[in-house]
Image 1 (cartoon, helix red, strand yellow):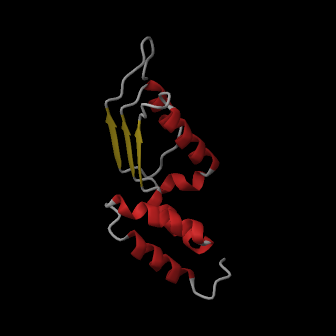
Image 2: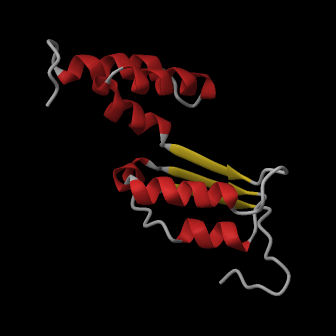
Image 3: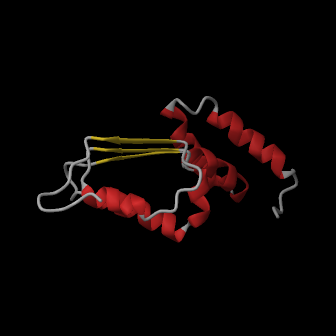
Length: 125
């Protein structure tokens, strides 16, 4: 329960307004800032922040590093898993798929796998 003078619904409306049309990624920074500004904003902001997750292989990182980071976040904060509705894995390898498969996704509505390759001598399944 919040110690705020305002009901939680007011804070939620502020976050919803901040999110706007969240299909535009321009609101992500504002939502992150709001979640850091006050505990009153955290839960509602997380609904938007974690709604869509994309994993892209970074040319400066070892394959699978970003997926491992995602796995660590979701393992340490399992309350975030139901927020994920869209999951996109691009330009990865079998290690990324293995890491992503370890997470018990419960509300994923859209899954996209693109340009995923198995490492030499390994199996995706």
